Every structure is written in C-alpha cells, then in structure tokens.
Image (cartoon, rainbow, N blue to C red; front, side):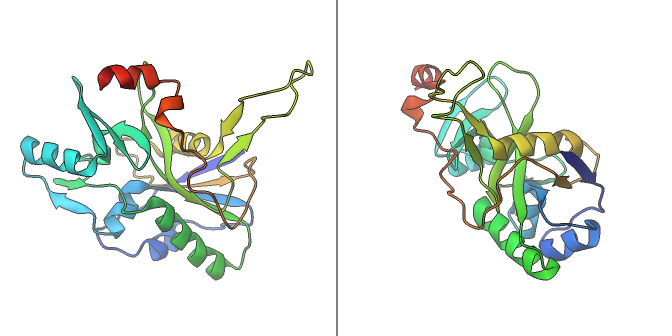
Length: 232
C-alpha cells in the first residue's frame, strides 16, 4: 500500500471542493482511495462560526453533541455515533474562527466520489472524510473516518479459521479508520498544509453501495461500556 499526502494552497471558505481536488491531485487511477480532511469539507459547506471565546465555544460543543462529559483537557463527546473530543469543534488552522464537522460526512464522501468517478471515467474509487481521533489511555491522535464511500469499511473474519484451525468468533478489521489513520500520519496535524492524500494498492473491497452503520456498535456491547457507565 502506498500513501501520498498532497501539499496544497490554503483552502478558502465556501470554495468548490471538487475543483480544488482536481487542481491538486494528479493521476487518480482506478482502485485508488482519496482521503480528504474534514476541515476543508466543512469549509466548503460554510460550517464556521465566529470564535467569541471559551463560553461560546463550550455552548457550541454541547449543542453539537449527543452526549458530553467534561474532562480536565477537553469535552469528551459523542457525535454521529463516534466518541470524540469537543464534538469536532476545532479552532486550529481556523484563522480565528471555529470550524464544525461536515453536516453529513457520508453524504459528502458519496457526492465527491460520484463527481470524480464521472469526470475521471473510472469505476473503483474510494473517498474518506478523515478527522483526528483519540484512543483511551494512549497519547497522541490517530485518524478516523467520519464518512466514506466506494469500499467496504469492515473486513469480518467471523467463521474463518486461524493458522491452527481455531474458528474465529469475533475478529473484524476496521478498514475505514485504519486507512484514515495511515493517511493522517502522512498528512500531519500542524502546518504541513496537506489536507489531501491518495492511497493506492490498499487491501479493500470496492463497491458502489455501503452500509453507513457497519462500523457502529451498540454502546452496551462496547468494550469500554464499563467506563461510560461509570461516567454516566
């Protein structure tokens, strides 16, 4: 698998994302996956608000959250079926504003994919809308797929056998978040100015229709359920 992070000029609010991608990403070939940071998707959708200070930021985080709990560093929140910091409300690289998450990252990924497939005259293309994500008890961010299109997001091993013929009962690989993490590592978190990445030769199954709920899990069945129950 190869990952190429792409340096671009600064993306402007309400700019056309499709044109921006075509200008900066060359040679998008069959069986590629395009990763787009959620920040420029949100900017393209005009998802910004003025930053009036900590109290207004906190109000906005709570408004954007399905569930929220204050911690010593951030608000731990649930949004769009994911646990994340501050409901995705971000002030980094925002030029004095607050940038929210895209309205519907799965829809944004599908719309961009449809335009690219038609324009490039290719069949198999994946699109991931990525964002930074946290892991319990681990320092630093990884990547997460807020939305994706064009490929199967989960690889299930349930019912298959391991090398010693033992039947696997629970094993699955989270393809979408794994690819997002690999791309975010190359795209960076600071002033790299690389909001796009192109992945080739990834071990994925391309398909036109996806199940947007395939990565979701019932909170009661989550391995961290005891932690969340304690917080509640």
